Image 1: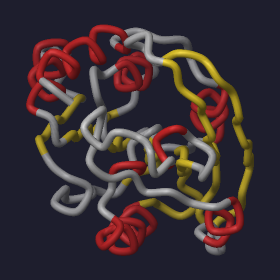
Image 2: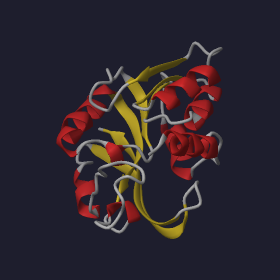
Image 3: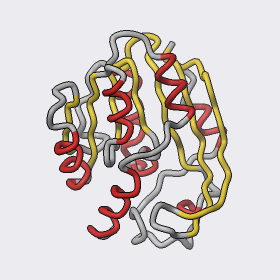
Image 4: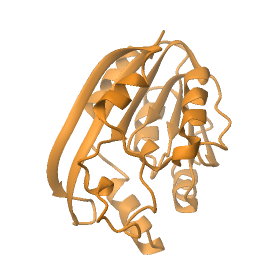
Length: 200
């Protein structure tokens, strides 16, 4: 994405409706209220979590994301931000890990390492809430322009997603298939698997 496209995306996603999967995850999360937002973007989920008394560690690889979030949460010492990738971030112990529409962009050769880090950082009965890109999404198509958003997208089939959660109790597994427009007004077909799961 160009700098202008990144800014447009963050402008469009600074505030958004509370997703049902995040609401469920928050309700399932036990003390201590410590969350990690993987790929925190403009900080809309950090805002919700911080309002509910969570200490939130947010990271993103985009400078624009961290710059915006630092300004947005400059008066909240319970929001800790860093410019990091999935593999360079030092995962603190947490009761909730949030990865909404972010693991799509984890390099394939780093995913297993990152997935192990996520599992290891969660307290016993900690909650994972995140989404995975399915094969029928526009971004998974071989004809999708790699310059449109990100050069590579990590795609999972349903059975592959389910295999990731052998060490979890799956509380909610939802497949989303819909068509519409992106925040920038571009036509898009979505195929997303959303998962809320408890570490066992």
